[in-house]
Every structure is written in structure tokens, then in C-alpha cells.
Amino acid sequence: MRPVFDPFDPAFRADPYPFYDALRTHDPVHTTPFGMVVLTRYEDVAWTLKSPQFSRDIDKYATQTSSPARQRRREQGRTRTKSILNLDPPDHTRLRRLVSKSFTPSAIEPLRAVTQKFVDEALDTAEQRVRDGGQFELIDDLAFPVPFLVISSMLGMPTTRADELREWSKVLTQTLEPTVSMQDLDQADRAFEGLIPFLNEVIADRRKNLGSDMLSALIAAEESGDKMTTTELVTFVVLLYVAGHETTVNLIGNSVLALLRAPDQLAWAREHGLDSNAVDELLRFDGPVQHTVRVPLKPVQFQVGDRTFDVAAGERVLTSLGAASHDPSVFDDPHRLDLRRPNANRHLGFAAGIHYCLGSSLAKMETQVSIDSLLRRFSRIELSGEPQWRDRLTIRGVDRLVLSVAR
Ligand code: HEM
Image 1 (spheres, rainbow, N blue to C red):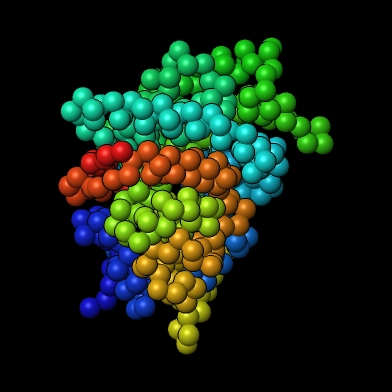
Image 2 (cartoon, rainbow, N blue to C red):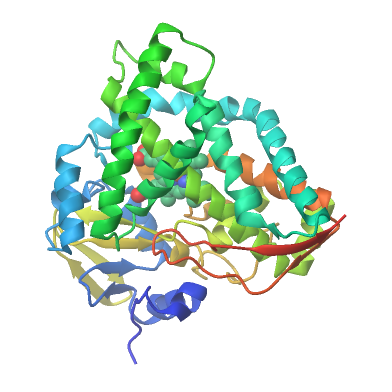
């Protein structure tokens, strides 16, 4: 039987990796019943992500007709300012140059102390609840609040409307999904109506009073006399909340689950703490972003052994980051979690090429501080019940992860 890519199948959602293996082995350039090409080999995924023959501006170049909701998102994409994620060079190059300084490892390292403070506070609250007879649920208690607080604090966002901001970012993330519905888009429109004037106000205020926060740095960022416009700034801040939030939440969730399921690795992490390589391995093993899409600007060919696969210009090509990061031709024994894996950092969980995740250092630091602190605080951590995988295609993560913990 020919393997199919069916991310709606609950078995796929619970564990997509055997499905990726079957596709990689039998149909590495797979065309789905809904008309997308799915790549699962490391080599093909990495090449596609790095090749200038592919565009990230799906709304502009994809030729396939899609659901009414996707059609509407596409129309919106044409009129709204595009985020850096959806731009091709030279527009992408210009923006990336303006923002990249704020995300280098040396720009991120000073945030470790404030991250530690947020993590400690979140763990204090959760621990108190457990003492009072309640539950510790990792996602709501730790994984969700920490990245939100960190990005808000980095940008120097006023805390007065934190709850609304959190809700808006949640709603907007849903629109990234290929299964986006009309209802999601209505909600997103309402979120935009609240968010945009709020951000315009914050930016106008900050322009008058620049501080040491990242928003001030972005306002002041200048390269060869070039600066970001207010609309570009607003769009970028929205992307930071959307791209940087749920992703990190789920990296923390998936990683704790992976460690609890691999006691030898958990023991190693307890003894040594997570270093950068260990976090890379957790991302490789079960990363929160499972795929991303590109569109070829002209016809392309993939050669696999003696087979040739043709892909037409404008076809949507889904590069499976999860499958590539489990390709046995690159990673030995790929389904084993090995925090000391020598080439863990070759994973594609942050993609590759010009759109390589801008927030990678930040996400890794937050994950490291969160998990190390969790392990230090509790000498016993066990899963209470089976996790429920979220109803998402692009983002992989669990809804709830209830833990039984003791000092
Ligand atoms: C574990 C957490 C994260 C993962 C797995 C992740 C993954 C990714 C991936 C796969 C891409 C490339 C998408 C593509 O090529 O189509 C990307 C881009 C991006 N990410 Fe992340 N991300 C994470 C956290 C963050 C954080 C914390 C931030 C910032 C606060 C961030 C900001 C961005 C931005 C701005 C881009 C667009 C870069 C560009 O287009 O040049 N991400 N991320």
C-alpha cells in the first residue's frame, strides 16, 4: 500500500514519525490528495529551504485553488503589510538586516536573569497549588506564561493590557494553520482591531521616550540611513508574539514529555543540566514546528536514486521539518533521544536558509532555563495520565500535561 500524508488521522497526530519514515522510504516526493507536494528527505527539505528558486510568499505565487477561508486569508495577505516571514529578497534582506541585531546570542543572554525570575515565580505558584491539594499542569503553569512574559518584557510592553494581548496572540496563531476556518478569521479580524491601535499607541509613545528595551532598539535600528516604518514595526511585533510564543510553549511541553519517556536521558539532564546541544536534540526529537511551505518560482526536479519527480511552478511544497530531522541518512538511530548526539544541531526544527528562525537563541534559552529549573525543583516528576495532542497541523504540542511532582 502506498503511504499517504494524512495529518488529520489521530494516529498521525499522536506519533507522525512512523508515517514520515514510510513516506521517506516509499514516496519521498509525495503528492497529497489535497494537491500538495510533501518532502520528507533531509537533503530535499534542506535544499528547498535554501534555494532561491522557491518563494515564501505563498499568497502571491501559489497557483492552487483552496478553501474559501484560505482564499480570504490570501486576499488579506495581498492587502495587509507582509511580515518578514512571508517576504522574499530583496524586501526580506532589508528587514532582516534591520532586526537581526536584537536577536543575536549576545543580545539574548542578558535576558536570562529575567527569564529565571519568571520561571521561579511560575514554579512557586504551581508548587503552592500542589501543596493546597491542586494539580501541576505544565502547559498553563509554566510553558505558556514564561515565553509570553519574556517577549512582553523584552519589548517593554505595558502590562496593563497583558490579558488581552495574550488572548490576541493566541487567536492570531490559529490563522497560521492550513486548516484555518472562517470563524478563526473573524476572530483574528477582531483581534487585529484591538491589537493594531494598541501597538500604534505604544510605538508612538516609545518614539518620544526611547528606553533600553527591544522595541526602542527596533525603532532606532538603522542601516545605511534605512529605518522601519511604523506599519512594518507593528507587523513585526505581531509576528514576534505569534511566531515566538506558541512555538516555545510547545518546545517546553514536548521536551518535558520526551524526557519523562526516556528515563536515562532524564537522569543525564538532572545530573548535567541542559546545554545548547541537548536543547537542539530535544528540538530534533520532537520539534513544535513540523513543516513549512514554499512555492517554486519555476518548474523544479527532485532526483532520488534513479527516480525523477517534477514539480510545477506555483505548486505548494510542504517541507517536513519533523521528517527531515528523523532522516536516518543524517541521524543515527533517529527515533532515540540522545542529549549527547554529536550532530544534533543539524536538525531543521528552526528551518534553514534566509528564514532560519530569528528567535532561535531566545527559544533555546527559555527552554533551557524552564526545564533545568523544573528538574532542580522537583526530585520526582511523573506523568499523570496520557497527554492529549493538540488539534493542529503546523504546530505540534500537547494541550495539557498534568504532572505529579515532589521535592
Ligand atoms: C522553539 C521555538 C521556535 C521554533 C521551533 C521556531 C521555528 C521557526 C521556523 C521553522 C521558522 C522558519 C519558517 C519558514 O522558513 O517558513 C521561524 C522563523 C521565525 N521565527 Fe521562530 N521559532 C521558535 C521561536 C521563536 C521565537 C521565540 C521568536 C521571537 C520572539 C521567533 C521569531 C521568528 C521570526 C521573526 C521568524 C521569521 C524569520 C524570517 O523570516 O527571516 N521564533 N521560526
